[in-house]
Amino acid sequence: MTAVPPDQPAPRHRRPPGTSDDAVAAAGKISEALETTEQARGHLFAFHQLTGRADLSLDDAAGLLEAAGHPELAEEVRTELIGRNVVSDRWSFQLVEEYDDDYYATFRRMEERVRTALVGGRRHVFEAEMKERRRTHGHPSHRARPGSAEGTDHPNP
Image (tube, rainbow, N blue to C red; front, side, top):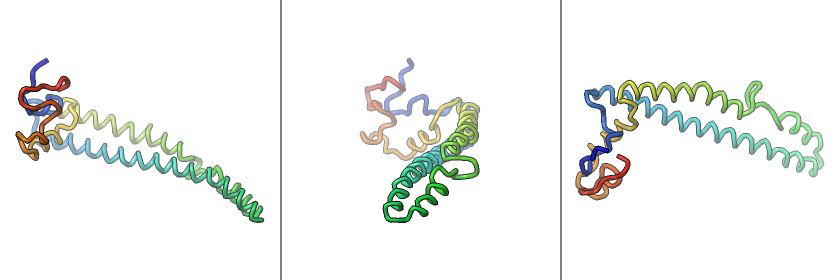
């Protein structure tokens, strides 16, 4: 293993030789877009879970309607809402699966393809360079990577 100079970014976070600023920026931007898509995916899972929880709560609501003397409303809740598709022909889990299998999977493949083509597959090169510009060199709370203090070396550069 090649020793990394003290308090420098790990090799996996440095741009390959000959890589342009535009290439680093482009790889960084598509990775940022993927991170935003990851957040959207999380919201989709939240939607799925909240919708399921609401559907299960409707059982209690229907029972309470019956207990309150409104069996016709209870039956209407059971018929119109419980188990209903959230969009045409789909429950929320089916939306999640379709999103994952189509858009999300394609997005992840494309992000990896761009990173491979532009920065040798390295992740977070743009962010690592931003960190180098923004950190206070020599300050113990601003080290480049774990274990990068003078005279130490981290086992996983």
